[in-house]
Image (cartoon, rainbow, N blue to C red; front, side, top):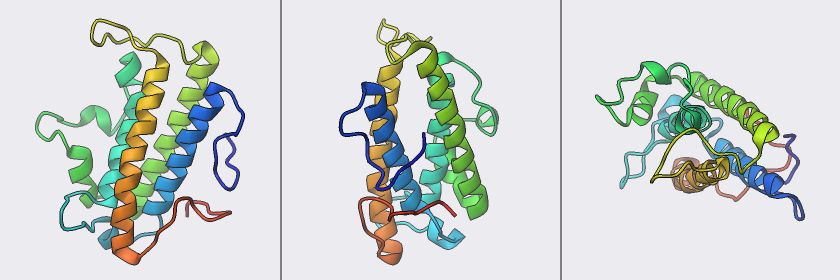
Amino acid sequence: MTETWPIEPPLAGTEREHLIGMLDRLRATFRWKAGGLNADQLNARISSSELTLGGLLKHLSFVEATQFTWKTYRLDPGEPWTSVDWEADADWDFHSAANDSPAELYALYDSTVAASRRRLDGLLDDGGLDQRTEITWQGQRPTLRRFVCDLVEEYGRHTGHADLIRESIDGLVGEDPPEGWQPS
């Protein structure tokens, strides 16, 4: 999907266009809030939370990598996710981010989102939002729509976290990236 500015879902589009538009707006806003920071800033916390922007970048990379692979279709999400001992540290994505450079975190996030977009576009082209996923949950096979909505919700929550953390770092506030903004 080509992003236009301001990033907005269509005013009169299809369900697919609205869902992907909302998701892409949240992705862009989150990336803007987490963008352009050094290692100390990516590891900064607000006093009441252990969350960091670096941890959120890596966590959302994990969510993007697994949402339309492992979580929905039981497909291997690839590295680094496959090799993690999640039983030893269920929050490895959040914790391990402190050991990654800003360049590594931004590259991981950007490449994972791009791959997730391609995968989701292919799934939507192939079977649409009503297709049943390969997992059984509460005795049912959920539709792809459910997992797209779950990803929108995940971004909504963490973009709010990013708002608070970023404002505490350098005062950056705002709802959307400025016109013409691109990740650096």
